Length: 224
Image (cartoon, rainbow, N blue to C red; front, side, top):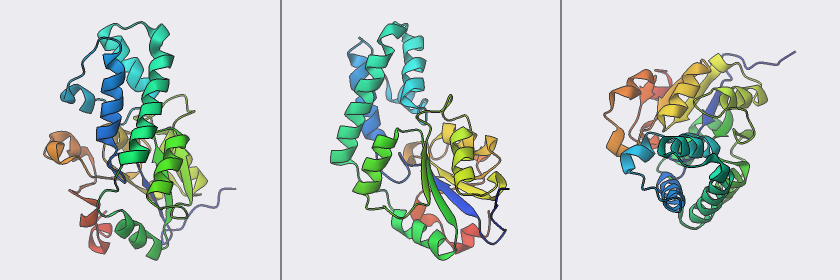
């Protein structure tokens, strides 16, 4: 029988890319560079419309859109992931408030998880780079799931590993696909959008919107 968390002992689940580490520009570089090998130039607006997808689904989406042969998709996926891991490992920087928000939830006795669309190889690189080993009770990836975000499975799997009901979880996300996944899992969702997209109406679907993880507090926790 599942030993679910009590009302006093809930869980928080963090996305990774674009929330804990400033990796989205590096993923964008990796994606654009790879598509250029197939004669395609992706605009910034097009890229931002597809953030939060797994690499396989990202490639599928743009190959379908631009009419590129799917026989070349595995090569593109492998190249993007290799480029992203290299770029993020070398140049990725922590986003403001990571340590502060983790400390807040640790002090409150929350179970803490990480749920990413990125492969575990990159999750391991980021956790080591940000010196967060031991900060999470579990790290999960949508890498091997049938569907990634906006499907909720990666969040549901994370909650299950944390032994918490989905309704007792708070998710922190930066992408709209992640927000959809969190709400589909029946979890509360706090979004921290990129500054250039902060005012878009789509974020109204979230339970709370912040400009930075530094803006979260005990008071705001009580408002969720």
